[in-house]
Amino acid sequence: MKAIVDCNNFYCSCERLFKPWLDKKPVVVLSNNDGCIISRSDEAKLLGVEMAGPYFMAKPLIEKHNVTVFSSNYNLYGDLSWRVMETLRILIGKKNVEVYSVDEAFLDLSIFSKEELPAIALQIRETVEQWTGIKVSVGVAPTKVLAKLANRMSKKNKQKTNCIMVLDTEDKIIQALRNTPVGDIWGVGYQYAQKLKEHWCIYDALQLRNVNEEFAKVHLGGVVGARLVRELKGIASREMEDELVNKKMIATTRMFGSPVSDIASIKEAVATYTSRAAEKLRRQHCAAKVISVFVVAKEQNHNLTFKNYGTISSHTILPAATSCTNELIKPAVALVEKLVEKGQFYKKAGVMLSGIVPDASVQGNLFQPEIKNNGRLLMDMIDNVNFSQRDDVLKFAASGTTRDWKMRQELRSPRYTTRWDELYEIH
DNA sequence: TCTGGGGTCCTAGGACCC
DNA sequence: TCTGGGGTCCTAGGACCC
Image (cartoon, rainbow, N blue to C red; front, side, top):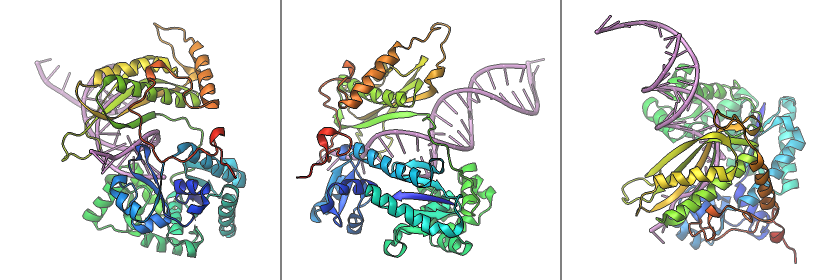
């Protein structure tokens, strides 16, 4: 059996932890640039504040009901996430925990007997809350997809379920599937849900479970769909994954605080993103062979959908994989030069690193037979200083000093647990 | 001049997730 | 005026090879 542990309204819970007077009060957390709403407390949900809705549209409702609003504070969330995951690792063993996202982890519970599972689930929920202050929900079932489904149910009626749902019999599973709309299954997104309903009158999870694998293969994205249907049937087809797998792509992308047309500013932004991406790369002890840059033009025509419009990108293949910021900034800035048009306003830019290899195995080439790693020592030093002092004490000149393009983040709370000068104080 | 079958590798793009 | 950021996996199709 498998479980998924999911933190309830995670970002909101993190904020409340240090502001207990917000308990039972409506709270929301905004995305970067204070663009849209990415976490809501139960009270905010009840008021009808939409998930992923633009902040400016929800603002009247938010002000009317006195909802407390925060900009996202990823330092805080990241640290609390680590505490939750560490608690899980202590409780059921490092090997049996797969961190799936900042607020979710899968657990392999096959070391326990079926009879023990409800008690184990309860112990997990209580211990995490006691040790970290974060409330979690636990869903238990034979497969990951069914565990996700159980978790969803546990959250639906918290009084009744106590945030725990164990689907350990065929009857319970069938009942659960029947009550789950097809679009709420993990792995069925908007497109597939529409298609299933319109073309084949498949509305709930039980109906989807009863299709044959061929159908799933043809209509739900090949082997992915076939696996999904097997999982619904209770046949585990998404196994626990090894952690510590290195990322195959590393991206740093941001909206600008307001549209920018000045090419020098865009270069600064891209240089800054490159530094950040290179840090991530070094943290996993890797080097990258390909760097891509994209910019997104500001819409000029409101009939166009805001997403994906006006994105242009280009990439450079480096002579040898590297993780040195300076070696990456140079091609990145050259790409900006190539992409950006004079007079055009841009609202977003990003840097992506791919062709990622462990840095122990960096391949030289004919013209650059020997990879000198002096740069790496310098980089480590910079990373250490930036980590122990504060972000970007040391940075490359190309990143600029004024940063007019920086995103808005007007409502961020202190980084209580990761900065000495922002430590929580009791008076 | 015209012509097969089988394979690999790479990239772009689509779908999904939180 | 104002709509996030960071990932994954898979497939189709083109280039190239024997």
